Length: 255
Image 1 (tube, helix red, strand yellow):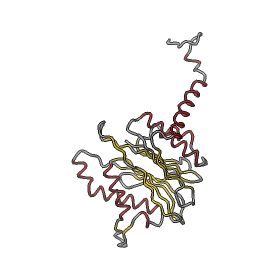
Image 2 (cartoon, rainbow, N blue to C red; image 1 turned 120 degrees about the vertical axis):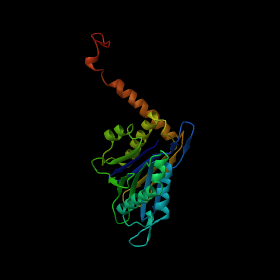
Image 3 (cartoon, helix red, strand yellow; image 1 turned 90 degrees about the vertical axis):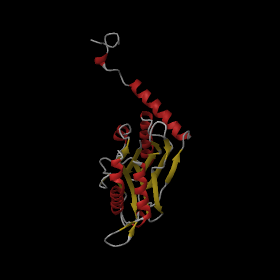
Image 4 (cartoon, rainbow, N blue to C red; image 1 turned 30 degrees about the vertical axis):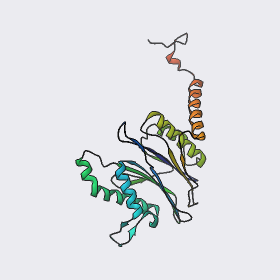
């Protein structure tokens, strides 16, 4: 299982991914799922991957080593694409190529062809963009109305993002809220776990401002977890009990 989230706000982009892979209760390992591609001053791009690890690694290799463009004969890589849209198309093409090579074999061995990718960043001359790319190679783009995208085990972190993030949220708060959504997911699903990789890029900076791994026991993240738990307890205590759920003496009325 996996949890990755990308948040695109007015000032820039936040990408967060866990690192746990699980092929059974006795086969748990750590693999990087957030991959950063950077040429400062020219482009900053990041990919978060989920699904079948062999598929996502094959896609990653294709976009790094290159794919021949049948129309031009040129070998295309993420670092040569002229726009984020063209780069997202390249990733989609890589996914379809992996499916053509391995899809039938995976299905014959009762293994799903399963991959989803968050792809965000900015290339000089274009705007910052964030896409979710599906296993068919098609994709959608984030909007100002819903400025985040998730892949993997998304249901536990989504309510926090829905309530707390909007396009005008500043980057430090977007990062903090994203980490809270990650913590909520890890609390409820043991298939998602640390370390956590994060990437932050300000709009038009064309470089990563933060490219960092949060290890277990890191002081800030530990403090964030404790404060969030305490804040939730304090909030539910502060909210009055429902008047229709208590009797005259404040005892639950069963009838």
